[in-house]
Image (cartoon, rainbow, N blue to C red; front, side, top):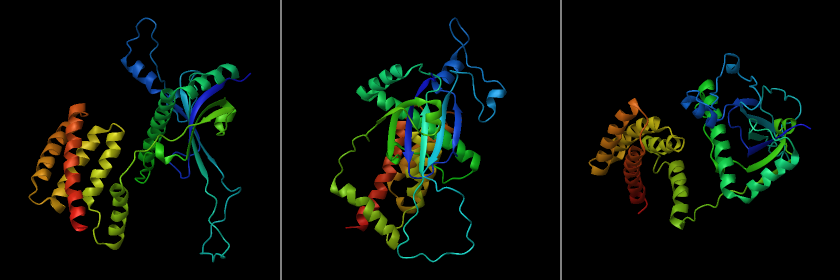
Length: 311
């Protein structure tokens, strides 16, 4: 009987970057252990040879996990490339949307029988912490792949995804042939985490900002854009990029709306100090807290500007 493999699968209604295929993933837990290991008793440092660096190669059984990217719902056959626009009839609707599937498969731990696989899945079904751990690890691997695709393609519009971007999240098990096609033997439908309750004011704020941007009454400032993007780097642990971008964003905010506001001046000074540190090394936890505080000061100035406009 073919072995079974546990996986976590994310379903998206948009392309997320890496093309369809199977990608070798050396688990971070093995990488960190190998880097720290000196080959002591009972330890087997992970050694990646020349053959293993080739894209798409298969490592020895148990040495690596797999990220499976698949697309479902694609119309059969290639569409002809039209040279001219075509007039649509009133009954013509939008095309079907292909579904992008991304599955992180624990190929480094094959399960010999369906009974044991079912027991593992039942354990996951009963423990929220285990579900969160699977989802977080799978999302981390997928975002590593997205970053690689962005760097290789040079496409700045390829960005990391968050849990809320996925239409469906599943944890399950299946054979190698099944998971390669985005299928499974059994799977759990993992619900979205409960969202925070928001006030009416915070719900209306994005709608007001959209209206202001579209009418040109209160355009989004470039510094405002930069400060928002800092949190993408912070969420993924890229503290050096976050610090350098925060300094640039706060300097722009100061130039655009700060004037003589002491809050922005102090925030720029803090961000500049942290950016100097970040050039040499990643920020420590206390330094990240200072950086977040500086960003918050700049954000409050922007909120004051928006509130003053709507009085």
